[in-house]
Length: 342
Image 1: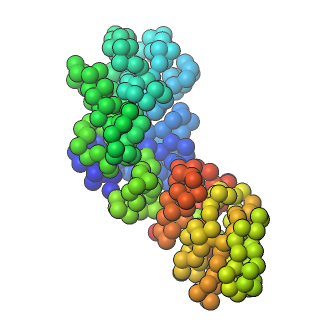
Image 2: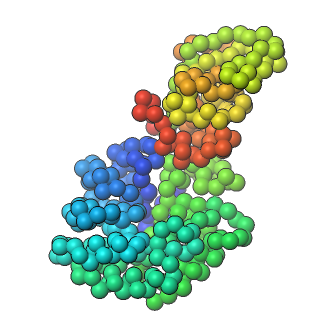
Image 3: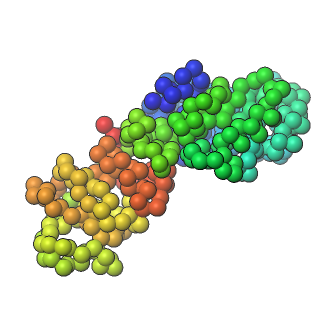
């Protein structure tokens, strides 16, 4: 879907943080049609190369020391440059025979990384004057691409700020993240950088993943380890917040906040049990959670459970819990076996 939205633009598939918790090795296979991978660490780049990725790799925060600069050259990486200290490292590098591709990052209003508008021209000049360096693109990052309303640092304002900086630049540009790619199709650029959308989560709380044609790539599955019937008025779980309105079958699922399921999930959060959608009942414990099995008489000990995946969108768990899909994907405990969604 990201490829379709990108059209003729080239795609950096963002696979940082172990491919948002999915496993970088899986991402190397899954993103075979992307034009490049965007990562954070030299170690991640080495893993990608070891697993057969021979296309471009972009280091989204660049390098943090001379040794990493040597490794970047060895692995043929494109480095983002966002501060003067990185320029100084590049100017002093010993290996000038290898042409180092760089992306100059411009701060167009997010005030996180990048050169301010009045510094960008001199930064670019220094890089273009450094032996063996090619400024392949100018890039920036959008702070509010997931919002449609006008406001401070909105997409038009950042785009205008960026355009002023790149007015005399003939190379490529890269501005679009997932939200911009899916919600602002009028933005140009030669390279787009989708991240969360590649993993089946909507980049905007106001637009569902299904509405954008996105599909789950991760499934968090478990099973029932106990089933019991409680009388009307019985309370379930820590804090006794959930109260049975009638005699109710309660299922206990082997998954909790120690596994990465959000403790803040409210009653009613959807859970898929034995082929049916049921509701979370009571506060999530460290290793367990409870569900209301009303209407699912066939469910019993050992019945399959899906906490998120193809049957329960991860956003349907994250947003009511006051969390983001990013957090849930990246926050799974290593003891959890994560399956690929069908």
